Length: 342
Image (cartoon, rainbow, N blue to C red; front, top):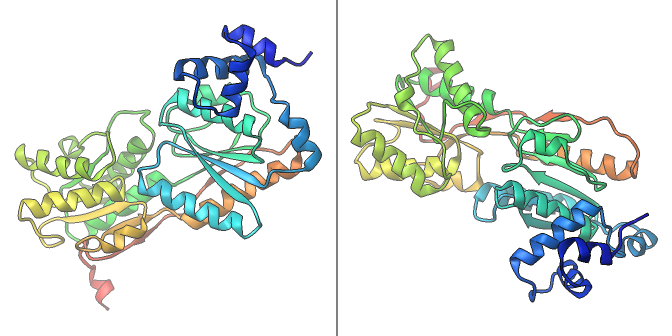
C-alpha cells in the first residue's frame, strides 16, 4: 500500500503540516527538520500527490541539472549549453546545488523526484560508486562526472587520462623537462585529480623522462587563489619547474598570476596548459593553452541518453557509458613546435 503524508509525518516525528511545508519549499521549516522529513520521504518511497496531476497533464518539459556549486565557471558554461539545447525543443532547465557532498546530492535527487522533472542530469562528486549503485529512483537519470560509475545508470564523462597525457606531452615536446601538476594527486581514488595525474605520468613515460612526485602539488580547491598558491609553494621550496599542467583552467589562470608575481615569463621561462577550454581562457594574459574536453559532444550525448530514458517511460534501456573526445586548444602560454611555424 502506498505511503501517505501521515506516514511520513510519523516517521519524521513532525506534524502533517510540517511535511506539507517541507514539500512545498516554504521557508518556515528549520534545516534539520527539512532534512529529517526528506529522509523519511526517501525511506518510505512517498510520492507527492502532484504525481497523478502531472501524469494526467503530460510531461513537465523541465530537466534538472545537479551540480556541486554555482561558483565554478565550468558548471556555469555547462548549464548554459544545456539550457540552449533544451530551449530549441521548447524545454527548460532547472539547476540544483548538490554541494559536492553525498548528502547534498542525495537530497537534490529527492527534491528532483518531488518536483517531478522529466529527467535529471547529476554531476557526481560526493557520492561513491556504491552510493550510486544503491540509488532507488524512478526519475530518468544520467550521471555526469569523472568518478567511475556502476553500469546501472547512463554516464557521460571526459577522457581525463588522455587529455592530461596530450597536454603534458605537448609541454615536453616543446621543451619543458620538469612539468608541475597543479591540483593533481598521486593518491588513487580521488576522481578527476587522480585521473589527470595518471595522464601526466603516462606522458613522461612515453617520453622516457622521470615524473618527479615533488612536482605534484596535491588536490584541493580549484579556484584562482589555489592555483597561485601552488606556484608560490613550488618556488618557496626551491623545486625547479619549467612547465605547468593545471588540472583545470581556473587553476591554470591562478598559476599564471603566481608566475607573473614572481617575475617569470610565460611561455619563455615556464609553459602553462590547463584543462576545460573555458570561454574565459582566451582572455587570460597570455591567452591560455588548454585541453578541450568536447563540451558540445558531451552535452548532446547526455541529452540523447536522457531523452531515450524519458521516451522509454519506465521501460528498459541498456545503460551506456560515453566518453567525450579530447583535443588541444593551443594559444600563447605554450611554445610552438617547428611544424606549427611551417
